[in-house]
Amino acid sequence: MNNTTIDAPQVKHHTKEARLSGSMGVGELVMNVLAFSSPLATVAGTLPVLLMFSGQTAPAIYMLVTLMLLIFSVGFVKMSRSVKGPGGFYSFVTAGLGKPAGLGGAFLALFGYIFIGFFAPAFFGVTLQGYVVNTLGGPEVPWYWYALGIIALTTVLAYNRIDLSAKLLTVVMLLEVAVVIVFNVASFSAQGFDAVQGTVFTLPSLGDATLGLALLFAVGNFFGFEATVIYRDEVKNPDRTIPRATYIAVVGIGLFYAVAAWAFIAFLGPENVQSAAESNTVNLFNDSVAALVGKTFADIAVILLITSVLACMLSIQNIAARYSFALAKDHALPPVLGRVHRKHKSPFVSALAVGLVWAAATVIFTVLGVSPDVLYPIASGSGTFAVLLLMFITSFAVLVYFLRRRRFAPESLWKSIIAPLISVMFLGAITYLAIMNYPELIGGSTLLTVIFMSFTFALFFGGIVYAIYLRNWRPDVYAKLGRQSID
Image (cartoon, rainbow, N blue to C red; front, side):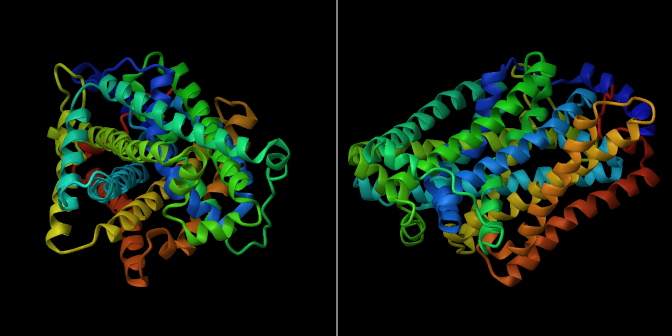
């Protein structure tokens, strides 16, 4: 527990100097999380892929993942009440496994979220380009101009006070959810109650060769809920808001996607849903909505799909900026990234930096002639793996932290030992599946798999090496790592 005595004084110092501020409540924090998972984009894009792997077992898979992540949330929430620094997983891993592992985890978080977010400009550009040309009959503007435009817009929003982003995300999320609910109701109504009953919750077989990929894609749909702790300084009453938002987000995401999968199965039929998803993965949702509700509503859904990508990208940019801010406040990154806007109380320099990284990458890949269809699966898949690896490391850190505390401050056995242990086993299994199926995750070759997987592990171990360097040569900086206030 030496870290606690060293780090705690720094928290007060940093808080007094420059502190992020906001007034988000439970609902707004949940909407920030839901925006990350991009409900409409997931139902239209990812869910058909999951149905291709899992067929009629998709709803049960979502409920299984929901149960497992609720168990993860038990230790996660308990940790959030003990480790009160605003560094999120950075602080958690530092508290459990020490400063070197904490810094490695912070690098995984920062680059993982930046990578995940970089899928959005390319996907947005291609989607909007197709809509303008094919639906509106407009000019064929190159996709990269749309991509640079959305980067500029989200950067302006992330530059401002978090409450502005929260209000915008709340409106967009409510519209997205409404579209999916209309699809669900139309599907269930068209088939009748008896038919719907016969399609519900078929359990997957452990011997199913595609179960691993189905679980992997399902877990990825929940990403974002773990970021509730990064907003600690920007929510009202964080000791109540963060736990409530975390549990509501996990349950809400799980039920939302399970019901949407059920609606697909009800409309297409349990025996046909897998083959339909295989043959029409890209347009499965749009075609189903058009058949059930009409083409006009399907066109509205396409517009909201575009805004869904914007909301997802804004949510990711806000999270990445806060990890950059936390590292900069500890001087692990240039201190200028830790500046707080006087009026907006936002990490405005870090938000600008994330936007500039995305813009520069878009320009570079455009000049190199890389297709956007190649960019977004690699960006999303490699970033997803980085965050998944971080979640596994964090679950292990939570378990170690509470095991150590039992010697002098015993906690509930379920919350501090059993639930974290189950989380370690579950997330460890999912991480193993991700490693074994990495080419499918990024949609790339063996060479790309080696490059991006090696880079991901290098981030974590590079952070450890950097922390050891700081300990030996910059002990003043090393002492600040983690910015924890531990009760």
